[in-house]
Every structure is written in C-alpha cells, then in structure tokens.
Image (spheres, rainbow, N blue to C red):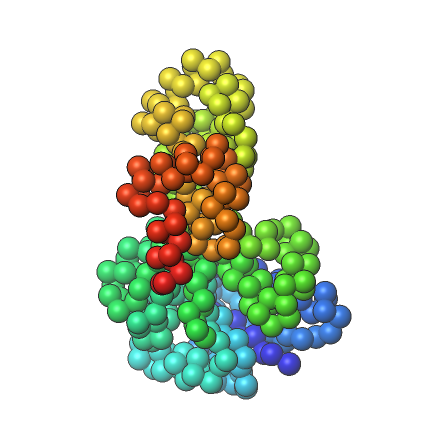
Length: 313
C-alpha cells in the first residue's frame, strides 16, 4: 500500500492539507485502500499552523517505508532550516519513490538541494525569490505544477490538489483521477498556468464591476467578448465601461482580452497535443492567422515555435 507522508514545518498552512482529499477519494473510487496517509514533521510533536492552531505530528524518522513524501510550508517562504532538519528531509526523500513540495514547500526542497538542476515552480509571487535564492533551480513561475522525474512541485496552495490528482493518475490511471476530480468539483487537468490568475492581478482592477468583467472574460474565452458583452456583465453602458476599464487597468478591454487568450493558448500549446486550429478555436481567436499575429506581437515568435521550445524543454 503506497504510504503518503505529509510533512509539516512550523507555520504551515492548513489549506495545504487539503491535498489528502485526493488520496482519500482515490481509495473510495478504486474501491480499496490503495493509499494510507500520515502526518509527520521532522522531529514530531505539536506543530503550530500559520493561524496558531496546533496539530499533532509523528517524527518523520518513524514513518516507516514512504512511497510519496509531501513537504508543506506556510503562506510565505519558510526560514532557512537547520542542518539536522534538512538531513532528516534528505534521508526521507532518498528512501521515497517520489517527493513533492507544495506551494512554498518548494523552498524546503531547494534548501535540501533536491531541486538543484531541476525545473520547479512555486507560488507566482515568490517565484523570483526562489530563483534568486537558489540559482541552481530552474524556476518556471507560470506552472500549476511541475513533474521533474521523481520530484514534483506545485504553485499556490490549491494547486497542491492539482498535483495530488496528477499523482493519483500516475498510480491508478486517468479514469480514477477524473472521477476524483469530479468529486472534488475541479478540473482534471486545469487549462492555463498561474499567469491567467496573476494576469488579473497585474491588470489591478479596483472595482468589483471591472473585476467581474475580467473574470467573465477568462471563463468565456470562446465568446466574442465584445465591449457590449463585458459592459453588460459590469452593469455599465459600453461607453462608461470602456472609460472605467482603461482608468483602472491602463489597457483597453480588447487588449486585456487578447492577453487572456494568449496565455490560455500558450499553455494549451505547451501542455496538450491539440492542433493549432483547435487551440485557436478553444481560446476565442477568430482563426489561426489572427492567433499567429497575436503571438508575434506578444512573444515575437509564432505559436509553432513556442510549442517546439516547450517540447524541447
């Protein structure tokens, strides 16, 4: 039975523990106890969360055989751990089939050296910090999760669920993973990377009306997404909407919609085998020619080239 060890460090975020739901539901869907789970910490004892709530943990060295090691931290990058703690994490990781750092847990893996020379991700707001602090790690900030051999890392805390579902798929197949995702009311494979979410933050809409229009656009990329459609969502006249949108974001509605479409198209090109025509259709570009023109304006290269680079990487 694959033993999943969830490892906590001081100031951990309770939401990270939500990843256990994927393994619990996998057992339910498979009709057998395929996974067993335990909550550990490097030295055991009560571990205090970021909100001050305590949780009892077992010393990691008492975990026994570990199949999957999930390392968790808090909402901000953890402090540098002492060498004794890092030695415990390294020993546990070396004995496990695979190890994952959820969200800022990637910093803990980087401290052990397990990410040296590997691709990794973390929450988009700390990606630059991870890159600067650990130059040997090849940080890719626009990823929901990354699988680099036996080492996995995820973006934000909720992305830990995406990673857990992917682990289930590796073990039990796409049908079980899809059923688990449906029970969790989430996408089996989430389209797009962190940029789709951070892009909304970059646009920095200050009012709920403009923010709601942006969220509507992101969720309905196949719609025409005209100013009239977005203005209706924002409960403004088209003229009022255009003026308010530019004042809050510094961009026209059309430019912002194109940015969202480009991000979605780029991730589909990198993460799927869909044809270029299908990608253009699914992300709302009128045709392949217009998608290619948008890619050239934004990235300086056509979509085919970006797909080749992603596959080479």
